[in-house]
Length: 254
Image (tube, rainbow, N blue to C red; front, side, top):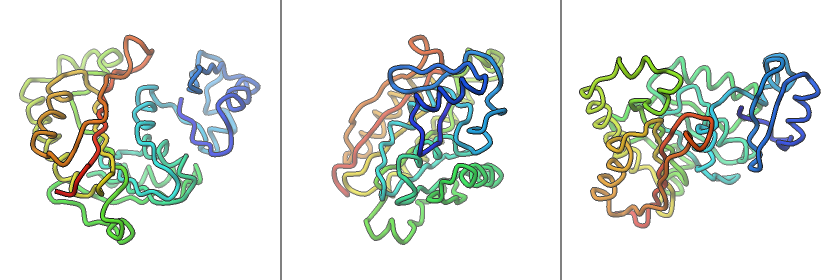
């Protein structure tokens, strides 16, 4: 479960859910899980947009974008904005988070969710990776974003534990098309990152061709970046999907 409340810590939020009949648990990192009881859609926190169902691995990916209040962030493949909301919370409505996607209906849903959660520093924009992004004025003034998240389209092999039928609906040709798209998105997005900024690349896949090999190829083609870390997150260590994340830092403009 993802918490989008700026005012409640995980322990007080868990206790509030327990008092409302939701069997909530929390771990040492403050992540909250559900074991049973009433659904969270019956709770005050859900009605206020403070909590939503979200896989733990997705929450941990969002935490890799350690944006501070006042910074500028771009969530490139935002979808309906689960990670955008999580990233925006610690920004305390200061700075700006630009969320882009190729589908307007997904961005409309993000806009609705952000309003309910009282997160007012999120903007939405259609972008399809055919050309570099035209930077918003305040981002151009600082010569790029502080953080860029590319949660790329992928095979979703990391979700096959809960969608086993997808294994039989996916082909090698599909994977190769996605690899090319991932490369295109990464290349176009990197133009918008300032010197010293961080590019976070993520997939919900465990396949090396979509993950480590993509990062290695990107770094070879873009020597102005250096790898900070990369890892798989999730199963079997966690009761979650499996996701890959790599954090890269831009050390020079060219």
